[in-house]
Amino acid sequence: MAIPEKDLRVESRKDWITTAGANPTTEQLMLGCQLRIADAIEAMAKNYQALTDERDRYKKRYMSERRDNASVRRSNQALRAVITKMKNKK
Image 1 (cartoon, rainbow, N blue to C red):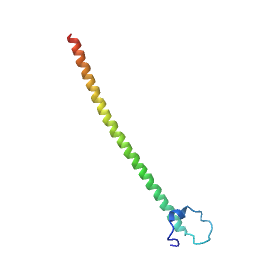
Image 2 (tube, one colour):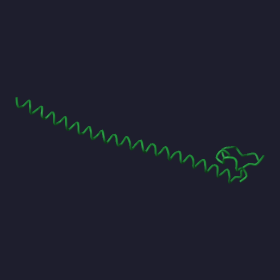
Image 3 (cartoon, one colour):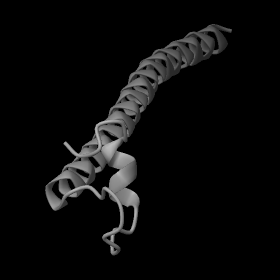
Image 4 (tube, helix red, strand yellow):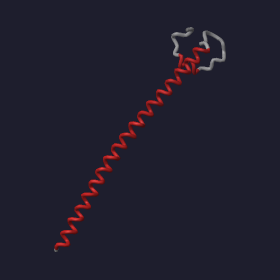
């Protein structure tokens, strides 16, 4: 490689119209672009995984609250029935 000390990701972002100095080859620029694309895809995958984990946490919490709500609803209905029976006994 002509430029081993430079990062190809950084070099691929530059405007390489001039031919002065030791410019990277087209293949090296394409490699730098591919590395940047790979980094972007990894970042997107990380964000997607974080969103998926957050969705799973909310779904678990929702289902738990839904079960608790149903339990409280049944308990209230049972207590209303007991109160009604007690009123009818008088």
